[in-house]
Length: 308
Length: 262
Image (cartoon, rainbow over all chains, first blue to last red):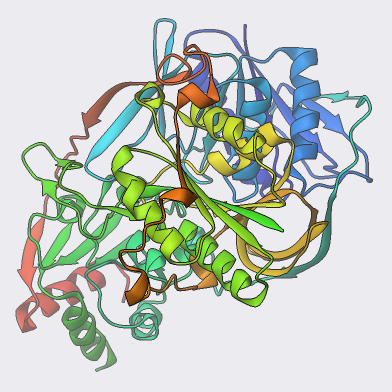
């Protein structure tokens, strides 16, 4: 029996439930038993898991990755999971590597696919730029992975998990204090957008200009990694491995080269229009409609045409 | 107060050489630059030192020997000490093994704060900050966009995580992972310091000093192994190619209308 544990992120419960698909695929041909770990979940509705391990203690500092690591370590010592799966939110990215180090096991970040060949579980992630995917194996148990929200989806969620109340043994007190929390409302989460107008390194104009075209198409703006690195756009609207995984109906790529790390951030996109001066750009290869030329000139012309 | 800046040099993804034949980046010909998030961290530390000369900064990096000169330039910029951790025995280390090497060195040092970056330009995993913190038994926080207060006892920082700005107080020593939203500039080495000999402030640390077992480092000490790299073949669908001219724009408009977007 392959036993997997999924850490449920209280702020992203649905995306956490999607990770059930990761556990099932990782099990391969083996029978699988999937556990969720919910810490102070309160009355959130959870389905699809076989079992739900519940830790309830209102005194826990939920933003202390060390405290979460202590809890997961205790759960792992009690259940000996074959795999631990963590959602790669910003906070999940603090927790997952810390847990791996505590357990002295390897961890593979941001996996996009799983291949099981016999006893070997190959975890696939985009390799450094280029048009490459790396297959990685992990010589340690539990196999730890982090997965971006929106990469995998789970269908049948009727199962009501058996609830297990997990008593914690003494935890070291937290020395982290959250002084305040301010919600930063993005106009729209790019993961939920139906139309994305997206700019890359070849786009030389401003985000404000891009916004005009996006509004004409009732869409949202997004960017590729170079614009975030150059501080021209916030990481919250970045598509790709180090940003977000998106599934719009229409994706307009303006001056986006299309490195593997970017393309792996596009899942179930219906139509792609790629505008690029370089006809050999990998992004063009994926597009339904390719426009060869300058991205800004294209944006201005299309915007003007839509206005009339 | 002592601040250690843990920095990484990465291939410059804006100016790399791409080999279309093999579909790979030519790493030999690609220049190594200081990772932008790490640069912000170092620039922040140097700015603090300008305001309080009692602050001591050490910059630590793990990588090839050719980085020695780059690190010495940080001394010429005002850093008190630079340490390069380099040994061919470390080659092939994954994040677990790398964190073991770094923390073995850091444990031998006194410090109040370790500053590093959150993301790496080369699409790395961002595991090192949290993993080093775990081994050192320190608090850690990522995505830090500003540092409000730092003293020997605690740090107060602002982090942008998952659509929230969190103001967090952490007991020191702690590992703070910054982002380049700090928009700090590193500046340039002053003309009179360009050729300054800084060898006494530089150290090279190899495994002779760290004495880690070969079972723990390099490929042997790394539980994650790359089985193969494969070029992804994608199905090319029906596709139309146009130019940025009136005809091209009309084709795009027609496409958008057909699919119901306008």
